[in-house]
Length: 129
Length: 139
Image 1 (cartoon, rainbow over the protein chains, first blue to last red):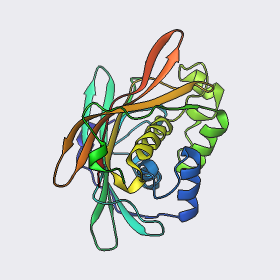
Image 2 (cartoon, each protein chain N blue to C red):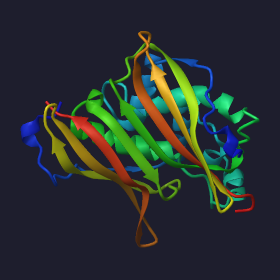
Image 3 (cartoon, rainbow over the protein chains, first blue to last red):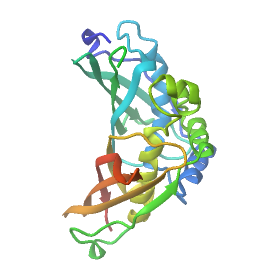
């Protein structure tokens, strides 16, 4: 991973909160109504491909484990709405051969309001670790 | 939504337990979009140093969120949730989500929770999620 990629921002990716997908997610976790907070992970995965493909960042996804995750909401997601997912590389630290990257994503609604900010800390394990 | 009058500092959330099956993990991969082979392919998982496939950290956090939503009364009341992933979860294990009220804010009324997910393994308690937090709006 390249520490100089800290601060990189990526073009917005569209994500629709598909009611059938939300229903499948609710059913898996035994939640009866609404959009479960961690459904946001589906939006994050819509924006991940451009991060994985970023050669300047050079993140080896095959060596990545998930360190921590945070979601902060201005409001819950609405079923059926379309959101713009804007990803950025918020921080990169290299320690002991392991790389620690914080990826932040803002989910913006049709009015330009950020309804949720997701932060994932990923750990790229040292080669051979 | 849960009423402010029913909440006190130190109050515990009801524990929520589930057995993690291979079918659950596959269903999670499909609904989330996270098709990392670490969660589906035993040979790949062994090459990464695990005895077999492990559940997604976000599957475990999703279960923790289910315990928070059940306590909150509705998904929309959850204003924030976070998790630190400390231990893998293997197929067939029982994960137990829990939490307690750390503090209460007024105007607007919000419960600040500490939350976790535990698993018993070889006679010890391991922590797939430690230092989880959540903020829940109260009525």
